[in-house]
Image (cartoon, rainbow, N blue to C red; front, side, top):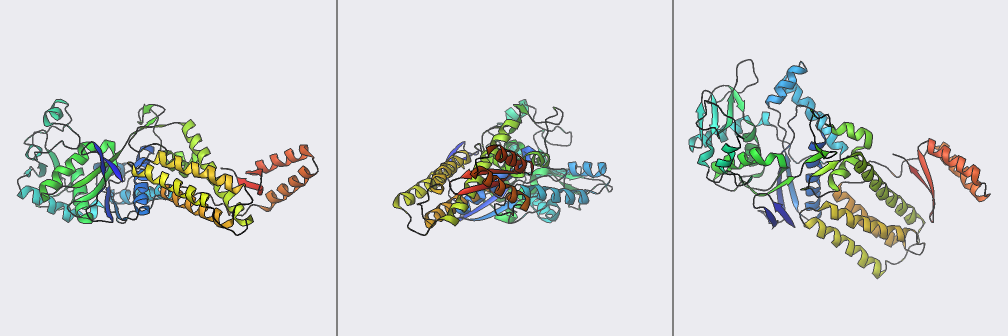
Length: 465
Protein backbone atom coordinates (compact mmCIF):
# COMPACT_ATOMS: atom_id res chain seq x y z
CA UNK A 1 0.00 0.00 0.00
CA UNK A 2 1.20 3.51 -0.80
CA UNK A 3 0.39 6.45 1.47
CA UNK A 4 0.80 10.12 0.68
CA UNK A 5 3.06 11.30 3.49
CA UNK A 6 2.57 14.96 4.38
CA UNK A 7 6.06 14.92 5.91
CA UNK A 8 7.81 14.10 2.62
CA UNK A 9 5.20 15.44 0.21
CA UNK A 10 5.03 12.21 -1.79
CA UNK A 11 3.47 8.76 -1.89
CA UNK A 12 5.50 6.13 -0.07
CA UNK A 13 5.22 2.39 0.34
CA UNK A 14 3.75 1.63 3.76
CA UNK A 15 6.36 -0.23 5.80
CA UNK A 16 5.27 -0.59 9.43
CA UNK A 17 7.70 -0.67 12.33
CA UNK A 18 6.68 -4.23 13.08
CA UNK A 19 5.74 -6.50 10.18
CA UNK A 20 2.04 -7.31 10.03
CA UNK A 21 1.11 -4.67 12.59
CA UNK A 22 0.05 -1.04 12.27
CA UNK A 23 -0.16 1.58 15.02
CA UNK A 24 -2.44 4.51 14.18
CA UNK A 25 -2.99 7.67 16.22
CA UNK A 26 -5.86 9.97 15.22
CA UNK A 27 -6.41 13.37 16.81
CA UNK A 28 -9.87 13.15 18.30
CA UNK A 29 -12.46 15.77 19.25
CA UNK A 30 -12.18 18.58 21.76
CA UNK A 31 -15.39 17.74 23.60
CA UNK A 32 -17.08 21.09 24.18
CA UNK A 33 -19.94 20.78 21.67
CA UNK A 34 -21.57 18.53 19.08
CA UNK A 35 -19.42 17.60 16.09
CA UNK A 36 -20.02 19.41 12.81
CA UNK A 37 -19.83 18.11 9.24
CA UNK A 38 -16.15 19.01 8.97
CA UNK A 39 -15.37 16.92 12.07
CA UNK A 40 -17.15 13.91 10.56
CA UNK A 41 -14.77 13.60 7.62
CA UNK A 42 -11.62 12.43 9.45
CA UNK A 43 -13.76 10.25 11.71
CA UNK A 44 -15.14 8.33 8.70
CA UNK A 45 -12.02 8.42 6.50
CA UNK A 46 -9.62 7.03 9.08
CA UNK A 47 -12.16 4.42 10.18
CA UNK A 48 -11.94 3.16 6.56
CA UNK A 49 -8.13 3.22 6.78
CA UNK A 50 -8.30 0.99 9.84
CA UNK A 51 -10.83 -1.39 8.24
CA UNK A 52 -8.81 -1.62 5.02
CA UNK A 53 -5.54 -2.42 6.78
CA UNK A 54 -7.34 -5.18 8.68
CA UNK A 55 -8.83 -6.42 5.40
CA UNK A 56 -5.25 -6.64 4.08
CA UNK A 57 -4.22 -8.73 7.07
CA UNK A 58 -2.67 -6.17 9.43
CA UNK A 59 -3.21 -6.29 13.16
CA UNK A 60 -4.15 -2.68 13.83
CA UNK A 61 -3.89 -0.79 17.11
CA UNK A 62 -6.07 2.28 16.68
CA UNK A 63 -5.86 5.19 19.13
CA UNK A 64 -8.12 8.24 19.14
CA UNK A 65 -7.93 10.70 22.02
CA UNK A 66 -10.52 12.88 23.72
CA UNK A 67 -9.35 16.37 24.56
CA UNK A 68 -11.39 16.81 27.74
CA UNK A 69 -9.24 19.62 29.23
CA UNK A 70 -9.40 22.82 27.22
CA UNK A 71 -10.31 26.50 27.54
CA UNK A 72 -13.25 25.97 25.15
CA UNK A 73 -14.68 23.37 27.52
CA UNK A 74 -14.31 25.73 30.47
CA UNK A 75 -16.11 28.47 28.51
CA UNK A 76 -18.93 26.11 27.47
CA UNK A 77 -19.32 24.86 31.05
CA UNK A 78 -19.97 28.43 32.21
CA UNK A 79 -22.59 28.88 29.47
CA UNK A 80 -24.30 25.65 30.54
CA UNK A 81 -23.92 26.41 34.26
CA UNK A 82 -21.98 23.17 34.63
CA UNK A 83 -18.45 22.05 35.52
CA UNK A 84 -15.74 21.42 32.90
CA UNK A 85 -15.69 17.76 33.90
CA UNK A 86 -19.46 17.36 33.45
CA UNK A 87 -19.43 19.24 30.17
CA UNK A 88 -16.61 17.08 28.77
CA UNK A 89 -18.38 13.86 29.77
CA UNK A 90 -21.62 15.09 28.22
CA UNK A 91 -20.03 15.82 24.86
CA UNK A 92 -17.98 12.62 24.84
CA UNK A 93 -21.35 10.84 25.06
CA UNK A 94 -22.79 13.00 22.28
CA UNK A 95 -19.76 12.38 20.07
CA UNK A 96 -20.10 8.63 20.59
CA UNK A 97 -23.77 8.76 19.53
CA UNK A 98 -22.75 10.42 16.27
CA UNK A 99 -19.85 7.99 15.79
CA UNK A 100 -22.20 5.02 16.20
CA UNK A 101 -24.60 6.62 13.74
CA UNK A 102 -21.73 6.95 11.23
CA UNK A 103 -20.81 3.27 11.82
CA UNK A 104 -17.40 4.25 13.17
CA UNK A 105 -15.87 1.55 15.31
CA UNK A 106 -14.64 2.59 18.78
CA UNK A 107 -10.86 3.00 19.02
CA UNK A 108 -8.87 0.33 20.80
CA UNK A 109 -8.01 3.05 23.32
CA UNK A 110 -9.65 6.46 23.79
CA UNK A 111 -7.14 8.22 26.08
CA UNK A 112 -8.38 11.33 27.90
CA UNK A 113 -6.18 14.29 28.78
CA UNK A 114 -7.60 14.41 32.32
CA UNK A 115 -6.30 10.90 32.99
CA UNK A 116 -2.83 11.60 31.56
CA UNK A 117 -1.76 14.54 33.69
CA UNK A 118 1.16 12.73 35.38
CA UNK A 119 2.57 11.56 32.04
CA UNK A 120 2.10 15.02 30.51
CA UNK A 121 3.96 16.63 33.43
CA UNK A 122 6.74 14.03 33.16
CA UNK A 123 7.16 14.77 29.45
CA UNK A 124 7.35 18.51 30.12
CA UNK A 125 9.97 17.86 32.84
CA UNK A 126 12.05 15.93 30.29
CA UNK A 127 11.90 18.87 27.87
CA UNK A 128 12.87 21.33 30.61
CA UNK A 129 15.77 19.10 31.71
CA UNK A 130 17.02 18.87 28.10
CA UNK A 131 16.88 22.64 27.67
CA UNK A 132 14.03 22.56 25.15
CA UNK A 133 11.58 24.21 27.55
CA UNK A 134 11.64 26.84 30.28
CA UNK A 135 9.40 28.12 33.06
CA UNK A 136 8.20 31.73 33.09
CA UNK A 137 5.80 33.11 35.70
CA UNK A 138 4.14 29.74 36.25
CA UNK A 139 3.90 28.91 32.54
CA UNK A 140 6.22 26.54 30.68
CA UNK A 141 7.17 27.27 27.05
CA UNK A 142 8.88 25.27 24.34
CA UNK A 143 11.98 26.82 22.72
CA UNK A 144 10.95 26.53 19.10
CA UNK A 145 14.26 27.74 17.66
CA UNK A 146 16.19 25.06 19.54
CA UNK A 147 14.50 22.31 17.48
CA UNK A 148 16.42 22.54 14.21
CA UNK A 149 13.81 20.69 12.13
CA UNK A 150 10.89 22.90 13.16
CA UNK A 151 8.62 23.48 10.15
CA UNK A 152 9.48 20.23 8.35
CA UNK A 153 5.85 19.02 8.33
CA UNK A 154 4.15 22.29 7.32
CA UNK A 155 7.08 23.29 5.07
CA UNK A 156 7.34 26.68 6.79
CA UNK A 157 10.54 28.37 7.88
CA UNK A 158 10.81 30.29 11.14
CA UNK A 159 11.21 33.51 9.12
CA UNK A 160 7.96 32.76 7.27
CA UNK A 161 6.16 32.21 10.57
CA UNK A 162 7.34 35.53 11.93
CA UNK A 163 6.49 37.34 8.68
CA UNK A 164 3.04 35.78 8.65
CA UNK A 165 2.45 36.71 12.29
CA UNK A 166 1.12 33.20 12.92
CA UNK A 167 2.45 33.21 16.47
CA UNK A 168 1.16 34.24 19.85
CA UNK A 169 3.09 37.24 21.17
CA UNK A 170 3.67 37.49 24.92
CA UNK A 171 6.10 39.48 27.03
CA UNK A 172 6.76 36.48 29.28
CA UNK A 173 8.14 34.35 26.42
CA UNK A 174 11.79 34.35 25.39
CA UNK A 175 10.75 34.35 21.76
CA UNK A 176 7.40 35.06 20.07
CA UNK A 177 7.64 31.66 18.35
CA UNK A 178 7.71 29.72 21.63
CA UNK A 179 4.49 27.86 22.48
CA UNK A 180 2.92 26.84 25.80
CA UNK A 181 3.41 23.40 27.30
CA UNK A 182 1.87 24.34 30.67
CA UNK A 183 -0.37 27.30 31.54
CA UNK A 184 -0.76 28.63 35.06
CA UNK A 185 -4.26 28.76 36.52
CA UNK A 186 -5.85 30.33 39.56
CA UNK A 187 -7.47 28.45 42.46
CA UNK A 188 -10.94 29.09 41.04
CA UNK A 189 -10.03 27.63 37.63
CA UNK A 190 -9.70 24.00 36.55
CA UNK A 191 -6.13 23.07 37.48
CA UNK A 192 -3.65 20.38 38.51
CA UNK A 193 -0.57 20.64 40.70
CA UNK A 194 2.80 20.66 38.95
CA UNK A 195 6.45 21.56 39.71
CA UNK A 196 5.68 24.99 38.18
CA UNK A 197 2.54 25.63 40.20
CA UNK A 198 -1.15 25.04 39.62
CA UNK A 199 -2.18 24.94 35.99
CA UNK A 200 -3.20 22.80 33.03
CA UNK A 201 -1.43 21.61 29.88
CA UNK A 202 -1.18 23.41 26.56
CA UNK A 203 -3.05 21.85 23.67
CA UNK A 204 -0.14 20.23 21.80
CA UNK A 205 1.66 18.38 24.60
CA UNK A 206 -1.29 16.13 25.36
CA UNK A 207 -1.10 14.19 22.08
CA UNK A 208 2.66 13.70 22.42
CA UNK A 209 2.14 12.14 25.85
CA UNK A 210 -0.83 9.97 24.89
CA UNK A 211 0.64 8.72 21.61
CA UNK A 212 3.91 7.81 23.35
CA UNK A 213 2.13 5.92 26.11
CA UNK A 214 -0.24 4.03 23.82
CA UNK A 215 2.02 3.31 20.83
CA UNK A 216 5.63 3.93 21.89
CA UNK A 217 8.23 6.55 20.98
CA UNK A 218 7.62 6.15 17.24
CA UNK A 219 4.24 5.42 15.68
CA UNK A 220 3.41 4.16 12.21
CA UNK A 221 0.68 6.56 11.08
CA UNK A 222 -0.52 9.84 12.57
CA UNK A 223 -3.83 11.13 11.15
CA UNK A 224 -5.93 14.26 11.33
CA UNK A 225 -7.50 17.10 9.41
CA UNK A 226 -5.42 19.35 7.18
CA UNK A 227 -6.06 22.22 9.59
CA UNK A 228 -3.97 20.41 12.22
CA UNK A 229 -0.73 20.34 10.19
CA UNK A 230 0.24 23.69 11.71
CA UNK A 231 0.61 24.37 14.53
CA UNK A 232 -0.70 21.26 16.28
CA UNK A 233 1.12 18.47 14.46
CA UNK A 234 4.22 20.58 13.86
CA UNK A 235 4.44 21.16 17.61
CA UNK A 236 3.80 17.51 18.42
CA UNK A 237 6.83 16.58 16.32
CA UNK A 238 9.02 19.20 18.00
CA UNK A 239 8.02 18.08 21.51
CA UNK A 240 8.18 14.33 20.95
CA UNK A 241 11.40 14.19 18.94
CA UNK A 242 13.19 16.55 21.32
CA UNK A 243 12.16 14.35 24.26
CA UNK A 244 12.95 10.94 22.76
CA UNK A 245 15.54 11.65 20.07
CA UNK A 246 13.51 9.42 17.72
CA UNK A 247 11.10 10.07 14.82
CA UNK A 248 7.62 10.72 16.21
CA UNK A 249 5.65 9.23 13.28
CA UNK A 250 6.75 7.65 10.01
CA UNK A 251 3.64 8.60 8.01
CA UNK A 252 1.35 11.62 8.31
CA UNK A 253 -2.09 11.51 6.67
CA UNK A 254 -4.30 14.62 6.49
CA UNK A 255 -7.80 14.90 5.05
CA UNK A 256 -8.94 17.91 3.03
CA UNK A 257 -11.37 20.64 4.06
CA UNK A 258 -15.13 20.67 3.51
CA UNK A 259 -16.78 23.66 1.86
CA UNK A 260 -20.50 24.38 2.00
CA UNK A 261 -21.89 25.30 -1.43
CA UNK A 262 -18.36 26.38 -2.48
CA UNK A 263 -17.87 28.54 0.61
CA UNK A 264 -15.79 27.92 3.71
CA UNK A 265 -17.93 26.64 6.56
CA UNK A 266 -18.27 29.10 9.45
CA UNK A 267 -20.87 30.12 12.01
CA UNK A 268 -20.60 33.77 10.96
CA UNK A 269 -21.44 32.84 7.35
CA UNK A 270 -24.53 30.95 8.51
CA UNK A 271 -23.46 27.75 6.73
CA UNK A 272 -22.45 25.73 9.77
CA UNK A 273 -24.01 22.25 9.98
CA UNK A 274 -23.93 19.80 12.87
CA UNK A 275 -23.49 16.17 11.82
CA UNK A 276 -26.63 15.02 13.61
CA UNK A 277 -28.77 17.75 12.03
CA UNK A 278 -27.57 16.72 8.56
CA UNK A 279 -28.14 13.06 9.46
CA UNK A 280 -31.68 13.77 10.59
CA UNK A 281 -32.44 15.09 7.12
CA UNK A 282 -30.36 12.70 5.00
CA UNK A 283 -29.40 9.78 7.36
CA UNK A 284 -26.07 9.04 9.01
CA UNK A 285 -25.19 6.50 6.34
CA UNK A 286 -25.66 9.11 3.61
CA UNK A 287 -23.25 11.38 5.52
CA UNK A 288 -20.73 8.54 5.77
CA UNK A 289 -21.05 7.83 2.05
CA UNK A 290 -20.50 11.52 1.34
CA UNK A 291 -17.24 11.47 3.32
CA UNK A 292 -15.75 8.58 1.35
CA UNK A 293 -17.06 9.22 -2.18
CA UNK A 294 -14.15 11.61 -2.85
CA UNK A 295 -10.43 11.07 -2.26
CA UNK A 296 -9.69 11.94 1.37
CA UNK A 297 -6.99 14.52 0.54
CA UNK A 298 -9.17 16.50 -1.84
CA UNK A 299 -11.33 19.45 -0.71
CA UNK A 300 -14.98 18.45 -0.72
CA UNK A 301 -18.07 20.51 -1.42
CA UNK A 302 -21.13 19.82 0.74
CA UNK A 303 -24.31 20.45 -1.26
CA UNK A 304 -27.89 19.19 -1.14
CA UNK A 305 -27.49 17.84 -4.69
CA UNK A 306 -24.42 15.81 -3.74
CA UNK A 307 -26.18 14.38 -0.69
CA UNK A 308 -29.14 13.32 -2.83
CA UNK A 309 -26.70 11.67 -5.24
CA UNK A 310 -25.07 9.81 -2.32
CA UNK A 311 -28.47 8.62 -1.13
CA UNK A 312 -29.30 7.36 -4.64
CA UNK A 313 -25.97 5.49 -4.76
CA UNK A 314 -26.76 3.83 -1.44
CA UNK A 315 -30.14 2.79 -2.83
CA UNK A 316 -28.34 1.02 -5.69
CA UNK A 317 -26.18 -0.87 -3.21
CA UNK A 318 -29.15 -1.87 -1.06
CA UNK A 319 -31.16 -2.92 -4.12
CA UNK A 320 -28.29 -5.12 -5.26
CA UNK A 321 -28.13 -6.79 -1.88
CA UNK A 322 -31.91 -7.38 -1.86
CA UNK A 323 -31.86 -8.81 -5.39
CA UNK A 324 -29.01 -11.12 -4.45
CA UNK A 325 -30.84 -12.40 -1.40
CA UNK A 326 -33.97 -13.18 -3.44
CA UNK A 327 -31.94 -14.78 -6.21
CA UNK A 328 -30.04 -16.96 -3.74
CA UNK A 329 -33.27 -18.19 -2.14
CA UNK A 330 -34.70 -19.09 -5.59
CA UNK A 331 -31.54 -20.56 -7.16
CA UNK A 332 -30.60 -24.22 -7.49
CA UNK A 333 -27.35 -25.75 -6.33
CA UNK A 334 -24.59 -26.06 -8.93
CA UNK A 335 -21.11 -25.07 -10.04
CA UNK A 336 -19.38 -21.72 -10.01
CA UNK A 337 -18.27 -21.01 -13.56
CA UNK A 338 -14.64 -20.28 -14.32
CA UNK A 339 -15.70 -16.95 -15.84
CA UNK A 340 -17.44 -15.97 -12.59
CA UNK A 341 -14.41 -16.97 -10.50
CA UNK A 342 -12.17 -14.80 -12.68
CA UNK A 343 -14.65 -11.92 -12.61
CA UNK A 344 -14.89 -11.93 -8.81
CA UNK A 345 -11.11 -12.01 -8.52
CA UNK A 346 -10.83 -9.17 -11.02
CA UNK A 347 -13.25 -6.97 -9.04
CA UNK A 348 -11.52 -7.73 -5.76
CA UNK A 349 -8.13 -6.84 -7.22
CA UNK A 350 -9.59 -3.69 -8.78
CA UNK A 351 -10.77 -2.64 -5.31
CA UNK A 352 -7.39 -3.45 -3.73
CA UNK A 353 -5.47 -1.57 -6.43
CA UNK A 354 -7.59 1.51 -5.76
CA UNK A 355 -7.32 1.38 -1.99
CA UNK A 356 -3.61 0.56 -2.11
CA UNK A 357 -3.16 3.84 -3.98
CA UNK A 358 -3.29 6.17 -0.97
CA UNK A 359 -6.70 4.96 0.22
CA UNK A 360 -8.50 5.97 -2.97
CA UNK A 361 -12.06 5.32 -1.80
CA UNK A 362 -13.50 7.05 -4.88
CA UNK A 363 -11.97 4.43 -7.19
CA UNK A 364 -12.73 1.76 -4.60
CA UNK A 365 -16.42 2.63 -4.90
CA UNK A 366 -16.12 2.42 -8.69
CA UNK A 367 -14.92 -1.17 -8.30
CA UNK A 368 -17.85 -1.93 -5.99
CA UNK A 369 -20.39 -0.53 -8.47
CA UNK A 370 -18.88 -2.53 -11.31
CA UNK A 371 -19.34 -5.59 -9.11
CA UNK A 372 -22.94 -4.46 -8.52
CA UNK A 373 -23.55 -4.42 -12.28
CA UNK A 374 -22.09 -7.94 -12.59
CA UNK A 375 -24.16 -9.24 -9.68
CA UNK A 376 -27.38 -7.70 -10.99
CA UNK A 377 -26.88 -9.55 -14.28
CA UNK A 378 -26.27 -12.82 -12.41
CA UNK A 379 -29.28 -12.27 -10.14
CA UNK A 380 -31.52 -11.89 -13.18
CA UNK A 381 -30.25 -15.15 -14.73
CA UNK A 382 -32.17 -18.17 -13.42
CA UNK A 383 -29.43 -20.54 -14.65
CA UNK A 384 -26.82 -19.11 -12.24
CA UNK A 385 -26.13 -21.47 -9.33
CA UNK A 386 -26.80 -20.73 -5.67
CA UNK A 387 -23.09 -21.21 -4.91
CA UNK A 388 -22.06 -18.62 -7.50
CA UNK A 389 -24.54 -16.08 -6.19
CA UNK A 390 -23.44 -16.73 -2.62
CA UNK A 391 -19.79 -16.22 -3.53
CA UNK A 392 -20.65 -12.95 -5.24
CA UNK A 393 -22.68 -11.87 -2.22
CA UNK A 394 -19.76 -12.70 0.07
CA UNK A 395 -17.37 -10.52 -1.95
CA UNK A 396 -19.95 -7.72 -2.10
CA UNK A 397 -20.34 -7.79 1.69
CA UNK A 398 -16.59 -7.93 2.22
CA UNK A 399 -15.93 -4.81 0.15
CA UNK A 400 -18.85 -2.79 1.51
CA UNK A 401 -17.78 -3.73 5.05
CA UNK A 402 -14.34 -2.22 4.39
CA UNK A 403 -16.10 1.02 3.46
CA UNK A 404 -18.42 0.70 6.46
CA UNK A 405 -21.59 0.77 4.33
CA UNK A 406 -24.93 -1.07 4.27
CA UNK A 407 -25.57 -0.97 8.00
CA UNK A 408 -28.65 1.24 8.47
CA UNK A 409 -31.33 -0.69 6.62
CA UNK A 410 -32.38 -4.23 7.42
CA UNK A 411 -33.54 -6.09 4.31
CA UNK A 412 -35.09 -8.81 6.44
CA UNK A 413 -37.21 -6.29 8.34
CA UNK A 414 -40.79 -7.54 8.47
CA UNK A 415 -43.09 -5.78 6.01
CA UNK A 416 -46.46 -4.74 7.54
CA UNK A 417 -49.41 -6.99 6.71
CA UNK A 418 -51.31 -4.01 5.30
CA UNK A 419 -48.55 -3.51 2.71
CA UNK A 420 -48.28 -7.18 1.73
CA UNK A 421 -52.07 -7.36 1.31
CA UNK A 422 -52.03 -4.35 -1.04
CA UNK A 423 -49.11 -5.89 -2.98
CA UNK A 424 -51.12 -9.11 -3.36
CA UNK A 425 -54.15 -7.18 -4.63
CA UNK A 426 -51.96 -5.25 -7.07
CA UNK A 427 -50.48 -8.48 -8.38
CA UNK A 428 -53.97 -9.83 -9.01
CA UNK A 429 -55.04 -6.58 -10.71
CA UNK A 430 -52.04 -6.79 -13.06
CA UNK A 431 -52.90 -10.38 -13.87
CA UNK A 432 -56.42 -9.24 -14.84
CA UNK A 433 -54.87 -6.33 -16.82
CA UNK A 434 -56.69 -3.81 -14.62
CA UNK A 435 -53.79 -1.37 -14.76
CA UNK A 436 -55.78 1.58 -13.43
CA UNK A 437 -56.46 -0.36 -10.21
CA UNK A 438 -52.85 -1.58 -10.12
CA UNK A 439 -51.61 2.02 -10.31
CA UNK A 440 -54.02 3.10 -7.56
CA UNK A 441 -52.80 0.27 -5.30
CA UNK A 442 -49.19 1.20 -6.06
CA UNK A 443 -49.89 4.75 -4.89
CA UNK A 444 -51.47 3.43 -1.67
CA UNK A 445 -48.37 1.29 -1.06
CA UNK A 446 -46.16 4.33 -1.65
CA UNK A 447 -48.21 6.37 0.84
CA UNK A 448 -47.38 3.73 3.47
CA UNK A 449 -43.66 4.22 2.81
CA UNK A 450 -42.91 1.36 0.42
CA UNK A 451 -42.12 0.92 -3.28
CA UNK A 452 -43.13 -2.15 -5.24
CA UNK A 453 -41.16 -3.34 -8.28
CA UNK A 454 -41.52 -6.29 -10.62
CA UNK A 455 -38.27 -8.17 -11.30
CA UNK A 456 -37.36 -11.48 -12.94
CA UNK A 457 -37.12 -12.97 -9.48
CA UNK A 458 -40.62 -11.81 -8.56
CA UNK A 459 -42.17 -8.85 -6.80
CA UNK A 460 -39.76 -6.69 -4.80
CA UNK A 461 -40.97 -4.55 -1.89
CA UNK A 462 -38.58 -1.76 -0.86
CA UNK A 463 -38.94 0.42 2.21
CA UNK A 464 -38.45 4.08 1.31
CA UNK A 465 -35.95 6.29 3.17
